[in-house]
Amino acid sequence: MELASCPICGKLYMKSAIEMCPKCLAEKEENEETIAEYVRTHHRCTIEEVHKVTGIKEIVIYRMIESGHLQECENLYYPCDQCKKIINKGRLCKTCMESFLDQVKEMKSKDENVEKRKNEYQSAGMYTKKYDNY
Ligand SMILES: [Zn+2]
Ligand SMILES: [Zn+2]
Image 1 (spheres, rainbow, N blue to C red):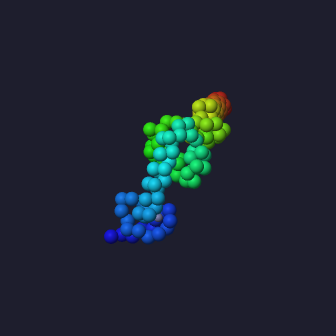
Image 2: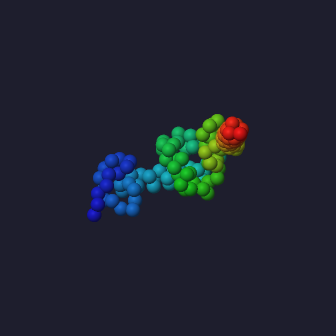
Image 3: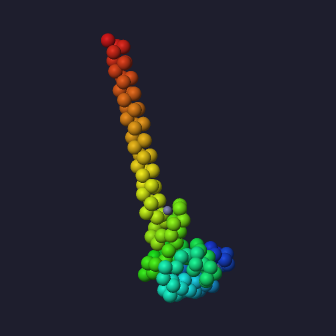
């Protein structure tokens, strides 16, 4: 049997398919149950609210949402990564997502422009060369 140190508390434990020691696993499961229970009974609650009421770290709640554990609770609202508007899907709100996509598009078209100019410049250079040869 193999020993591993728990990524949460650092204690050694018998390595298994589970990535943490039994104590932390029990704690995690308990936390998740508490979160799920709170969300079930308090629709439209935010992560901040769950955190304040239950005392469970926000990162634990985020992880639960990300891993799909709170999928049945569509009413869990949390702030957008950018503007802090309250959302319940993804990391960005619709507005921030759109402006993000716009930025990506703009960057791409800038790249394309540079590429186009470079090509123009190079072919122009080639023409001059050609003419020089004549
Ligand atoms: Zn542990
Ligand atoms: Zn936003």
